[in-house]
Image (cartoon, one colour):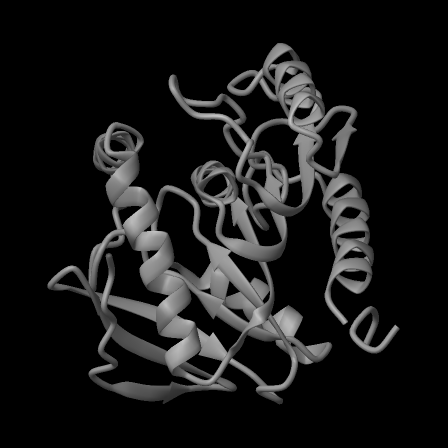
Length: 245
């Protein structure tokens, strides 16, 4: 119960201290990115966080700090590039769709973020990837890629599997957290994913929360549902305690 309650070449360019963590500059395929790294012990399990469609913002930093406070090492990835944090709906949609349409690039960016975390001394052999909305979709892409991680967690992420992909290479357990009032990602998609995971013998747990819409964990938004957020976070921490030691 130690942690419960309480293709791509990366070169670290620079890092500056922000509060308890660091903003970390790194390169993936010749492009500059800026992630967020926080740790109290590099021996601790690594949590890789993939952001929502608005890029790496204070939301992911807050989640990272929450995890660091109970003993985890955390790297929050940047999937867009240094300084790119879209605020307009059209820009957010265009950037996510570009990655949805180029899964090879998405995987490259995910692997690049993992390499950046490793370069900071993180224990990538004892790691879990988590993501929110777009980030949850990306985490499932990472799971299908066959990367060797202990677990993959998606919070209200897209659940559809791209044509030509499956979960036959997946290593590690999946935790799928979803709102049953989500009108963007339907319960039919939720059920279909369950069938795919069963077909490929992927250990998984899938949870829905009544009355919870898409993005129900986002603090301060009109979609935020405190009860579902609290319960899902508790289950997530229990999952971590089960899969990383």
